[in-house]
Image (tube, rainbow, N blue to C red; front, side):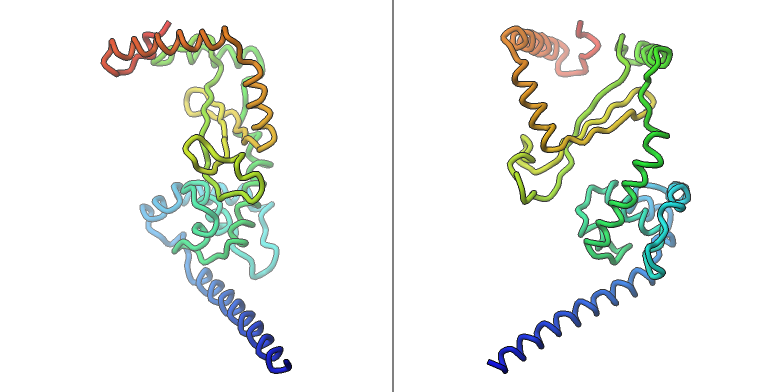
Length: 250
């Protein structure tokens, strides 16, 4: 009994030693590697931004992104980890294990969470603005009227996309999209000239509420309008041989 207990303690001790050695290896690796030393093309391919944009963003967030301890990650590395995660749609573990970094998943998660929170606090209201006043709405409407494909009366455009994520442990079925993958439905409002108004992540609760509200508002008249519109679009699409036909719709 005593021998078995001793063996068990030795196994636990060996595991702790391996964990500590792994942490030391990661520390040596990310201290030795500097992504900013990459060539311009290599840097842009890895992070989808240039070095100037990285430094501008880092300088804006610098007063609020100080390391928690002296041996903590450099501010530029924290921002780069988050940017690479945003740009490449990676999961947190692959993002931290890229050749440019040597970070564990928890460290990667902390970087992403911290940088995202600061961007939302200090940059969201500055760069994402919806035209609230009548004058601003009139200006936006005029731009849509003068667009290559005129859209009279519009003050913005909306688009939705699915952001893939890992299988949730709770209510897994609520995150399955029509492709059979697990994802989060995200919508973005915008206007011409690539100006973004707002992004609205759909949580599980309001997703269910919106689906129920939408289903409850469906009636026979709406179904008939959709059917007529669909048939009209199909006919025009056939007439133009499958080419662009939105400008022919009335």
